[in-house]
Length: 136
Image 1: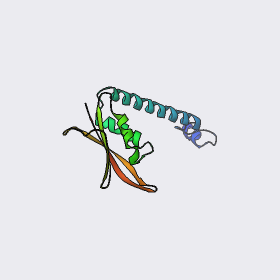
Image 2: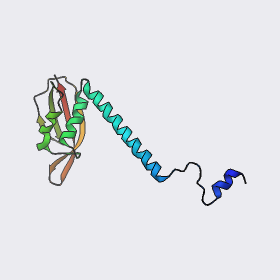
Image 3: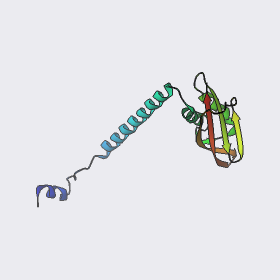
Image 4: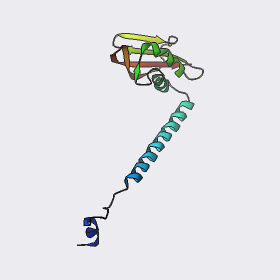
């Protein structure tokens, strides 16, 4: 038997590629923090430019549906997602029902959509869409 084979088969020695569990957890936490910081920096860089309707739709969805479920009475919160100096129109659509806030959007402005769940009544949640239009 070669030396490496003897080490692999001995009871107390570690095999190649094994890592202490604590070191693996620390590495995982560091990796997650790094990805989180990177995502935050990218988000800030994109938001500092001319935020389009996609960024506004993401912000509006976070304001209207922070837990992933939007309620129509919370739709006015979407207006806070408008970039400085811009106007925003938000429409929440669930099936054949629609709720709107903000001034009417001019025709031809780009629209962004964000899928959300919509609470129509206690215990009644349906799939829906939050549509956002941003213009100057």
